[in-house]
Image 1 (cartoon, rainbow, N blue to C red):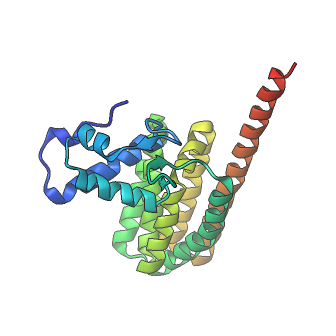
Image 2: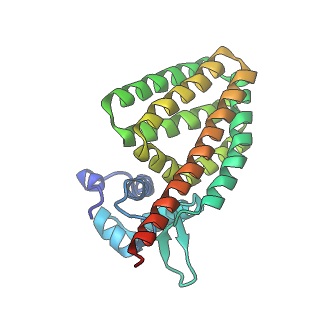
Length: 239
């Protein structure tokens, strides 16, 4: 298990160390280097990234706030374990938040926002062609961020980004489980972006809510499939 050595290639400014630690830790969690239940030790991460413990500590706190990490009764930090009920609750909140942000983005988007959304859609298309699921997941997150920011409602955007981050691990798992989901998610994202670009608030909100509902249904289905597989394995072990 090795974290990226990007931080060792050059000496960045002090203010960027936390960003590097955050990115490397988040990537390690999303890609399974640090699986659910893995204990994250500040001192070990610091040595792996060749930096002091202070920026690593800040990155860990940020990831804990976003739901990637959790502090247990023993005061130690672990990669958060999947909790379907929590994810579904977040998705119900996200349906409302994302829908409203998309409607406001359609009303308030600027020429700069439109250019940004067009560029991101192209990057998303290219990631589909490359078959790089992780890259597509990261770009999908950027699409959501761009729409939230285009709403020009900073508080709503911060809330939406927070909830987006909290289920990032689960959306990535959804992509890994089904290659076709990557393509359909791309189409859903483009439908939202096109409505925002066109200034069509009704369609932007409707497409955004539809996208989150699809995700909620997939989360439920994946959980049920895993439960059936687990029960089947147990039954086969019985005499």
